[in-house]
Image 1 (cartoon, rainbow, N blue to C red):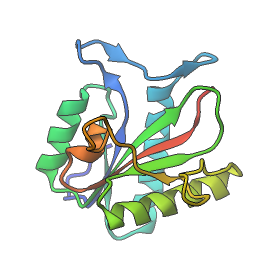
Image 2: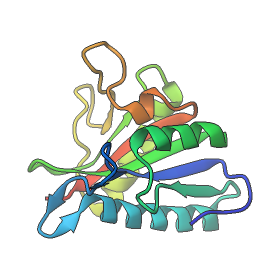
Image 3: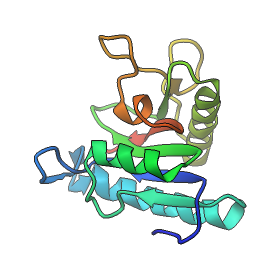
Image 4: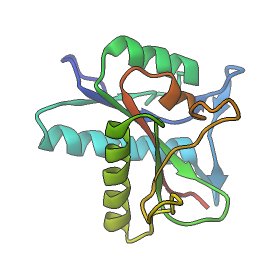
Length: 167
């Protein structure tokens, strides 16, 4: 859902278009696809946000047409203050976690609040970050830079939310 007015934040649906141009559903389990569930979460988040805050939220990649680099270009061009990419985790675990840029105090604060709210609303745990019981995390690649491009390459403060485990 897109608005004609300038929005301050965006919810990004993770996955969708693959690097080769096909469809990337993300993680799949029990007949469910990560992209489709992440899209539903983004739509609910946008509806809630726009009804309860003066700032407005957009959704990016709600039609699965943008590969990761295209999503980043669109976000950077739009001038958002905050971007949250929605994902579902996989691999047999439980809980929620939220990644942020390694040098961003603002990102850490947002990631912490988002994780606490998801955990409380769903009655699930925050996956340990190794420092405390919070689900706010930094993940670095071998180069020492942020692992996730959506965090590393976007201009606004950005987080990647692993809402729940799809499996």
